Image (tube, rainbow, N blue to C red; front, side):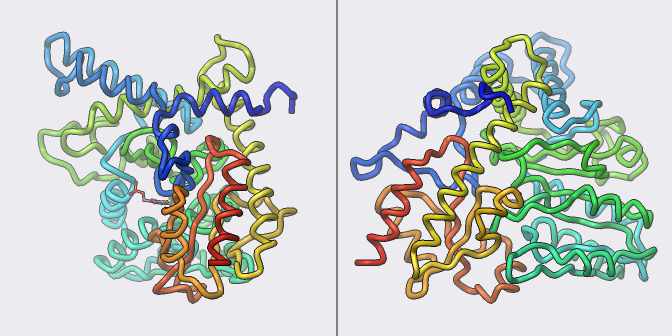
Length: 423
Ligand SMILES: Cc1ncc(COP(=O)(O)O)c(C=O)c1O
């Protein structure tokens, strides 16, 4: 990669300055946000866009007056921005909703109307429960069978042989995550989507954990549906769904009678958070502007700018992950769950789960929190994985990095963990 496309310390500093939350202090120390996997902070651009919407253009859909027309234009621009983010051609195939979970429940009801007893759906142990339970409940309602693909416990990767063996001509849906929000494993989603297609099944990808770290490309992934959540990629609390136009048009959505039958309105029930949807575009433009700055080209189109931004983010985060894994491996009381070998860092996201020989994840998170370091404890709703690893009821401590984190912050974490060990 061109050396210019690196996230240098000064570029990271300029990114960090855009996030007001990052200047917060806890006990006279700068706060360290390692809770990105639970939700990222937002840059000024997002906050300003939301305030501007509420101050000037706040209105409902379809009115024959200026604020409503402005509002509709702004919302449509967000559909277009998300299409660029996902590598989709058609903004109407993007819909918004309260969060990924709610969108997935709604889609699961619509899809399951096409299932019958004897049909099978495939979910995985590696997934967040939002990509398991909606499908399990929908299958139960229509008498379809659920096939759960196990993980390989030694490195928390999906057992692909098992996956291949459960997918058959009976399979109607394969629901899988792009990356684990718990242990960071990246899944071979294109292979999985191809496998689903080869038996006539629909593929559904949960890209919630993937979106802040790597470029989504619905064409390259060859998926039928993909969901993500803007609050995990520097935006507000909004869920996003993309689907193939043909499927979105053919399927019967659970919707109200006066609501549109056309895309995207067909899949967007009730009144949306307009200010949030406007904020999504600003979050995507924060990333695109980073790509433009990296390329030193303000005219770069949004998709290409995003490609460069994500290349640099991925490389930067990979370096941070190596530093973190190497540091954690030197702490004998800690165990890393998932891919721990820094040589295999390209197979994982910068999201690392650990346990301590003598302290619970709750105790660790509390002790870190007192030191101004925000890390998550528990199962983060990746319950099946936590159960498969025998980690319930305590779960693990999750350190979730994003590109606004720094090497110094990792040093602070490692120092704090050593201190906690000795206390
Ligand atoms: C991988 C993954 N999928 C799904 C979800 C659920 O997303 P939402 O909170 O938008 O419903 C989360 C939330 O943590 C997640 O990390």
